[in-house]
Image (cartoon, rainbow, N blue to C red; front, side, top):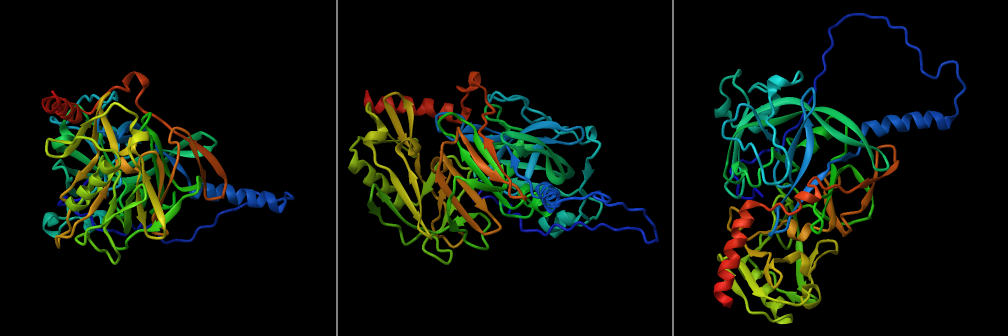
Length: 480
């Protein structure tokens, strides 16, 4: 989502220093098993329970979808503060901090068309809230030195996302309450102190009421992200996964080990801000598409970013043109470029039967299959547009970069293992469940969620509603 953002949050090392006053104390300590005959299995059970608490699985309920004719984003529900209060935040693997709208904020959206309530976090209403100043270790790692000349100044942030949206505010330290998996389809609250942004000024899409949420939860690799903060506290592993249901909405988002389905993986390109992987080739139902020599090279044969905060898939111009030509050679249609970005056409048959699959091949023989219902979206019953986009994504040296968003990630379980520095996926029914494994090796079923009720399922992202109305009007101009 924020490929071209100006803010680049550098990796930080979180250190917790616990200091005790010097002195001599005597405590009477009794072991919990003293005077009892315990079998080794019971002792192991005790340890296993402790380990399970140390390395938990977390269930983040999902809402939304990635369809261009609908909501166009995924969000989850978290709780912040003491007492805990609910907030809805977009999940984004392309950014590195959690921030929420905070009081007072006169220009923050107070309503949304997504069918969810909006709330402002109020630090004065939380007994566990603490200010984060410039002297804080967290701030010293992420701020430019000139912005924190005075030690008593608040630690501020300014985020610019790829679409031009911005968020400004100060960091605070408070409790986040998430749902720890404690049994099959069962959870219990897990609270941990974290640092997050308290947004007081939003702009662009973030300030619009049609698709507004309470904030954004970044799952990037930086130590400032929530996944890294929870791992630094010893609560979880730096592993998370999502299964984005693009058919019914919602899906699965989990922190921790996934036992099944089993996924094959490809290495993450080291020392990159985003989740970069190496693309080795593309084919249209077995017919190869040449990769352009301008594609960025990160020590391999291609630069490709996996980003769940992006809705569509963006390709270099030459690759986009070749791909569309290969697809339409298999199924000839009359294309009309609408709004200079969408290739649209009229079609009355079953697109899944008529159009070919697109296969993306990555290092270590990992394949990602994109089906017609993934890369095509419907304007009306007989009108379709390609979700593939010709993107202007480039590196600082001018090399082209592929950006793969939810269009290709939907209806697949995608696992990000930051400990092994790999990412992998497998086709999966995202309306069903997965098996997760806690620190003790115990497996539990974790089910899918949809935070938007069926009565709200027709809620559409206002940006796309406006776009679609334009698309339909322009399309009729071509076809009438």
